[in-house]
Amino acid sequence: VCLFFSGAHAADLALITPHVRNIFPDAEALGEFEGTPPSAAVLKGGRTVGYVLLTEDILRIPAYSGRPINTLVGIDTEGRIAGLAIVHHDEPILAVGITQERLNRFVSQYQGKSVFDKIIIGAKREGYVAIDGITGATITVMVENASVTRSAKMVAEARGLRPPATAPAERKQEIGASPSTSQGAPATAEAAKPTSSFPPVADAIPEGGPKTPRVSSTSPAQEKRSKQTSTGKTQPGDG
Image (tube, rainbow, N blue to C red):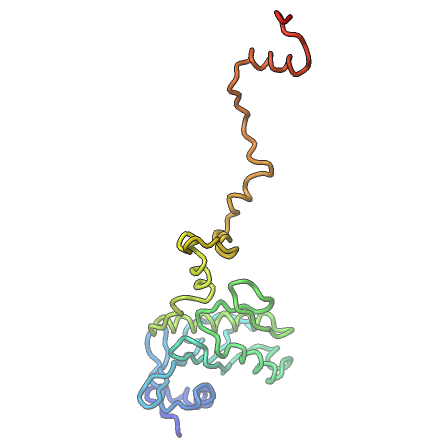
């Protein structure tokens, strides 16, 4: 099936057609690049199945070369990244030091991830989705990651796409969040964990209890007589 473009500039057709076909193999038509930020609807049977965008149209973040990396990004109607392809760059390392196979492996990691995920390069961190970088191209891949994730999220929000209503971690918290409603069952360890970044109250109290001044309910004279009695001294007037 020949991919029919209803609005893209003629100069861009030869550049992006093969990439759109790779990202959306069943696409039948592509709408105009429109809106703020600009994107084009991908159509099949007259129904929108996704959107494509060029990062250079949205965010021009300078990479190692001082120029942005222009990437075609496809997202589906659920806000997932369907695929992406670097269509132009001036990065020396990508031209001579990195093979196309390594570059393809890097960009393929984005496929299936949500545009609402916090994607980072490198080691795993709580609350983030980590992907592998490219050795020797740290700045390049960091700029590419920022360009792709930020541009895709902006388009998704402009097109009315929203993240899932409740994330798995939030559902887990809701299950154990109210021990009082568990019909007498003891609170679970998960429910007892604090959700705030501040230390729990129990941890803030020094071992042995808070150091507060001692308050005596007896008079000074009574305390003196008590001490004398405890040391075996005879009180005045005793036998």
